[in-house]
Image 1: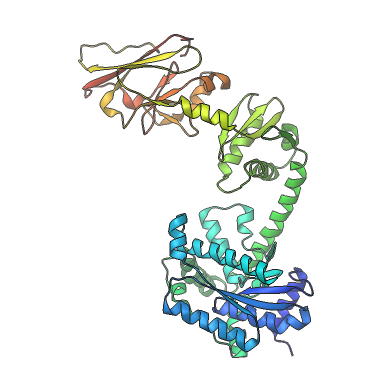
Image 2 (image 1 turned 135 degrees about the horizontal axis):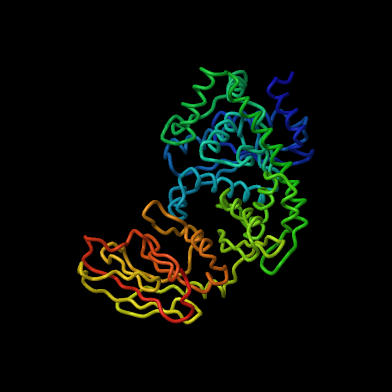
Length: 468
């Protein structure tokens, strides 16, 4: 007679359509409780599901003799069950150092790479991993505390391409009870008890407290919530993909009608923009809510407005369209070439309209009268940090004021400087902040005062001296 956990896993696998009859399934076997349980369950269900299990183990080269013992245990277990076993040795510390990754992230990457290679070479159709409900609960909280979208709160999917997770219907207590009933032993990784890792802190401190002091079913409830988030995320993705299908291709990017976005709920608008940015960039990593919000803000601004995005992208409004596109390599090179460091004394071109800035320094005397016009500025030279440079405006640039600061972008807007004019002009900055938007506004943090010993004078001349 089948064990209740085996029945539960079989039902879950059929509901989620995790396997097809005749498939070969490669199990990730660390030797821990979860992976031993997964291997045992799939071994028991192999006849009913018409699948052929195999197992692979990765020795990370971190825990010395303990890691070798885990590998020996995994090999013996597979031998007892008559299951093919494949072992891989990796130098995780070296891999982590070369790619500037944490040990956990490096180990995870190498495990997936090894699994894909073995599956390909040995003819396995699916890769089964032993994540269970406690892993889901920990991941939900981890993402929630760090800040996450609905997709992040969906946590760990039951299947993704060739990867399947048959134990997502079980929690750790059920798994340990199953192993005890079957008389199966497993390896204990000492690092799982250490609380210096964030996930272990969540596991041993937060989740343990929640189960003991709030609700014994906390893990199951978090896993159920993750399943609902997953369904919601799938629905939003499907709806967004339908709308993205109505976007038009343009050179190096896409554009979508503003009217189409405005008629949808804000949540769907955000998902559409996120998907479009990811499509043009070819990657969704590092695309934040702030980037999405900036793109959507273009719907309420005048035609011609643009913003910068990660991956060398720009987004803008062109009449009744929002576009997202890559900046050409030629344009990027041109922009980079416009930046220059300042030598004093010296004269430098700041735009394509014939404007120049002249720089000189002299000792400050209280008898000297500070210029009041917008084309000659005095700065306290000793307050400047690092090298001075002329450069294009960057996203996030701010200008210090007597009270607080303002973004350079908002100052351009207040002074009605067009997007085209901004592209043609450079700003003056040191290594910490902006000193002057020539002809528009200077930073108050560098003002000449009674403590000033040396004055930096910057004069603007030529071109269209019509700023405020």
